[in-house]
Length: 373
Ligand SMILES: *Cc1c(COP(=O)(O)O)cnc(C)c1O
Image (cartoon, rainbow, N blue to C red; front, side):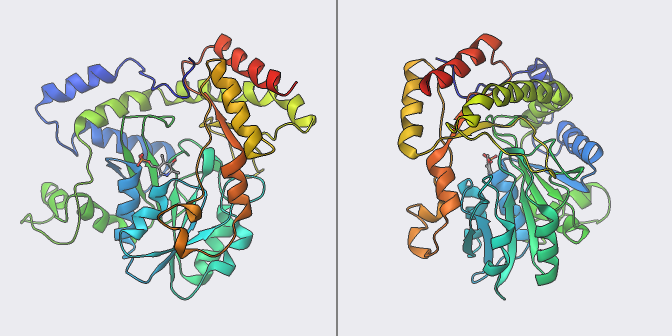
């Protein structure tokens, strides 16, 4: 069976983990944590990076930093992973779901302004498949209405909007290093602080509500409980694993892009014949080879294709069930979000991982094409 995903080991992970163990410090905020944070700050110009135990945790930190209170509204695309919304729900926010664009699962900026009310505190955008949202339009609206923007950049490592790295544009951003992402650490994530007003407090929230980091730098003479916070730091074992991945980022990205482009070219004819739709990358966006999907014509057709591939030992999967239709949130919603529903019903993701061989990929392509013959 060709799996949908296979976590890739670059080779140095275990060596670095061993180094961390031998160093005598395996709790968080040690050498490898700092190395990873510096890597991102230097390569992408992110103002301040804090590694977290997951992207979910980074989003929860963002919600605390923005002082989200019961009654506040936060706009979130319906077509996303639960954490994008759940992080704000934990603070008592009311989630207002936005529809996707017709062309890709990203939040439709044209529908955004109508969702803004005097209670809107933040917009969380998701760069689905690493493809940028129209950030100039989002930031302009946010500025006009004095709203904060959080980029859920879980899938968006090494991807750009008009030449600017994703994760550097919103006031805050969150990345994921879950084993299904491009750069992995098992479970792991990162908060990016772009707005300097949040820099100091982010570190405190990260360190369980204490000023421990400032204390170690000698900036304060007592180590105290100064704010709310939680245990958001990953262990050095996770950071050590992640650092090995970061050293190989260019190689990992090149390989994933190569696989992505082969899929894209291979299904050109199917698209021309109206059988499937391939991903569209807007002119302002880049592709980072995070995931490759096809849009089928209906849910019935998509499910038949999944079965056909399974019989041929290929594991292909659909993606999000629109959050506005989820058992937890259903009752709170009234609006129809047809584009989001369309991606829920018709989107199919094909296997894409570093070690996918050319033979395996050709087999996948052949079986998809065969289904539509
Ligand atoms: C993977 C993912 C998350 C969650 O990341 P974790 O690191 O598993 O918490 C959140 N949002 C999006 C869009 C994701 O793809």
